[in-house]
Length: 446
Image (cartoon, rainbow, N blue to C red; front, top):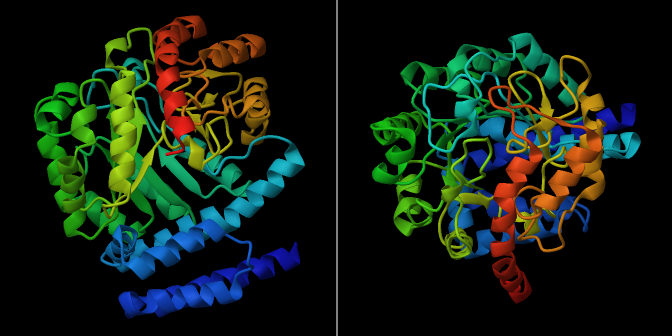
């Protein structure tokens, strides 16, 4: 254990020295740093990542431009990204997680998603959170306990969902202060980001918003409400003016898929200052979910093709969470890379799959990861060899039916509990329709 601490200190020192070296002249010194990395890194470590970085530097392509954009950020926020996200969460943390997985025989997540509150100041069409009610909250002490337990397992990345997390923004800033070694990201509608909050972000350094945007004004406001697009634009302008990191989160549906995968939309969010964009497939979760918002196979294929094309052209880090499973080996939920804790403390497999056997108020985080439905998920992953059919709910609904029934997991939607059969009956036709397209794309090797 002592040797391990010494190694971690040496790694941390080396990273700090490397970052200081780049700081003075990043464009000149980043290529030199790669030579040092290659010299002191074992040949079999992060080979793909190192090759991609080396290629980006040599070609000065869009990825290299994205690296340089990071050097336009506030220095303190940039330092926190490198220290907390790259070193603590991805290097040191991943090693601890792997040891814990081997020791405990269960999944250990890279990130923990949690809902500080079920309250939200908007009511968006097709959002399950709008049906949860506004009365549920995790206390500051609850969240602090989750983070402390997570860090013991090597988890240094915490992502707030909701509800609208910024309803609890004072507590979110307090948690940044309490855990300066962690990186915090919040999925937010952006309407509560103001000048004062930007100053708080600059002070604590380790908080990053992912702002929900469903396309341009007409597409966005038809789902989120009149005037919301302009409020998001104002929030992005504030963040950019303060040199703060932020990204975009967008849910693609049958109605907005063309908007959010257009070159105009990519250029708009890049010009607005976004460094990343998360793309989520619409999920028909909840008894009153609007199934018509599910994309058709042709629409999903268009999303797949467009995002991959712009990924090679634009200085924006993108992840399409339904179509990029090949890069992470299938579904990342169930604690494999992340889990979700709702505002009542129920520990859920996924932010979209609301069934559980465990509540954080009644058991430890580790016990929840060993609960029946989490172990069923662990044992069944991956759910399909075709990585364009990764999800046990959307593309393999028979898997979710079986896991929920066999483990006795119950619905965690307290406003209107939804049976697993009701949910999966909505996705079974979708899965059947998508399969031929998924097989065509997967077999093409693109």
